[in-house]
Image (tube, rainbow, N blue to C red; front, side, top):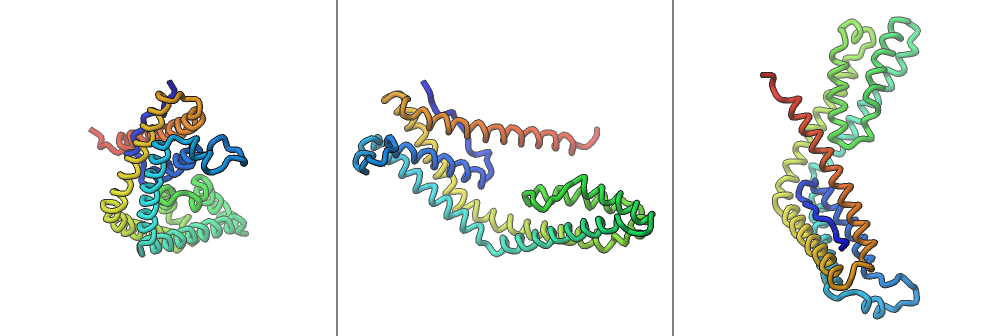
Length: 260
């Protein structure tokens, strides 16, 4: 018998969990749609939906809406705006430094042009980090800054790089401080309203899944097949993300272990 796969939502990040539940909801409401014909009246559509299932979908929607409102409240914190502004500032610092080094590759002095080409290669190696997620961008900038600071004093002085490196480092530091403040404030909310609303939305999801699986047994799986197939694909995608994340973290922890 076709069933929705078991899936533990708790390892997902908060925003990932909400995104999954929202996508699940978009699939679930199709179960209310009857055959989809324009000629069907609301009463005909309602008659086509198991009342227990309809109630479970409504209950899930209520909990999902509460989860959404809790997340919106956490996004409106003052620290969120500060972190966003700091992120824009560090993006500008990177773009300025990258543009400066690129311009210096056309310097009329061969030594300066050669050194600038070498430094530009560092920027190109890491690519443009400004379009990445904030945490990923921090990782890229950390490595780039370390590489820039590792340049010889002669090369740094030849291109007058110190102000650019210092500016980029300061802007990244300012962002990390703002992000930490945002995390501290959000953690207080997550411990409270977000954690509670997430838990209730997850529970409503599990209840709706159980209802669909039970109805497949009682009514047959035919009218639930497409829904189940779509949801199982969503679950497989999230499980792949979690496995990949677990592998990366395991490798990182192994790398960070002190040598014996």
